[in-house]
Image (tube, rainbow, N blue to C red; front, side):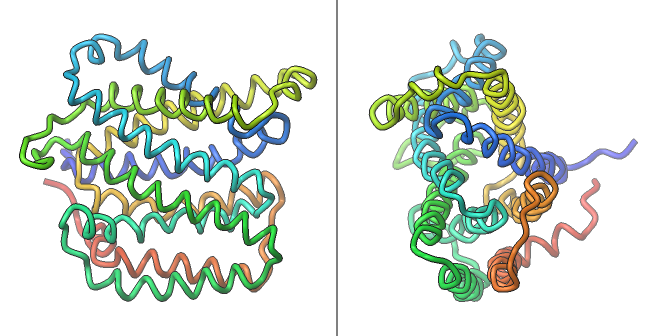
Length: 311
């Protein structure tokens, strides 16, 4: 029987995460057609967080305050990214384009790790950034103001998703690290995921209460609302982020993020099948340049994935 290394296990789990993430785009698009986007985000994350809290209640009770604080920090950063993301989905921008723009988080992760956590910035990132900028220019100049503003939501979300990925990996990783001058305890995957998802649900719910009208939900309530919220909560959120957090606990953030480059491809394929979306030739070139920047940025790690990972 072949024993996989932790890194290989993380690769396989994160590949599954990319598929669940792409499916989640479809669920979310269906849901916000019939309900306010921030309210949907709140219900989705509250349900997922409550389910995981029930499953991991003993572990949650055993956490120290520092661990709670780490999990809530992860959730707070994730909230900002998710709010920008759902507004991008609601803006009318093609899900295919949105998927590639959001995936720029892969480029931002090493940059932010270098700026804020003193990790060495790979040379490939310097090559990838102008390629990504060119791709963004091609996508932006091809559309009117409304589309461009929708694209900005996805770009903003990519910034915060990059921070989320870094903080999530640092909180979950099994290896010790130093936060300031004191060692920070790792947070087990299940309670970390549950608390961070509940934080997103509560914060986005507060924003929805302030900014959105809930009357449209009650006046047009159908079983479809329940279907998409439940599917998004349990499949696209609870299952997805528990697996992602567990996988991130097995390898460094700089490695795990490599696998995420395939998410926009899954998203584009599912959008074509689900919503019959298609890209213009110029949009295709822009998305191709963005994807090329992702490959360049993580090229050394990608080539490493092609080598045998068995012990």
